[in-house]
Length: 149
Image (cartoon, rainbow, N blue to C red; front, side, top):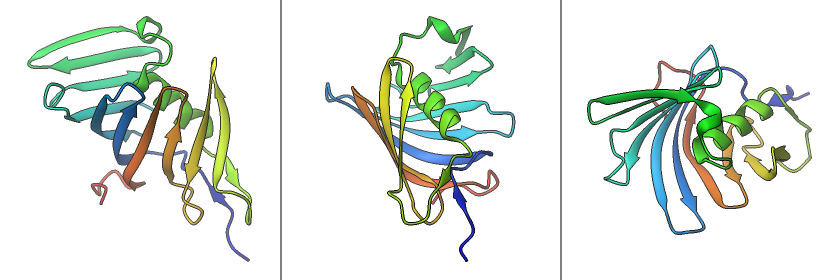
């Protein structure tokens, strides 16, 4: 019998592409550490390349072009992609996939509902679809020592 597949609840590294309905596109390396801190290292577009944003325990830390700033997570607007992505992944963490079922979860993320598509063999996220944007996981590694491929 096959082992139960669950959405990863531990640390991971991923490369994500974020696309909004307004034709905005960004790419980032996303890391969730063992304590649940999410850090986005933006690589595209060029105007955001090098920006780092971290979310942990209701706080946001931002570093860009040698400047750094910190503020409360609730200062981010509702639906802000980094906040929505971290919230969706936290809510889905540890959820089991039922063998033979569709490899996706439908979740409510505040006022926004979303669909999380998962790899049926690993439980790794493939895509999160929100009302105004989507996130494609171009790679995923549950081992922080190994860069995502």
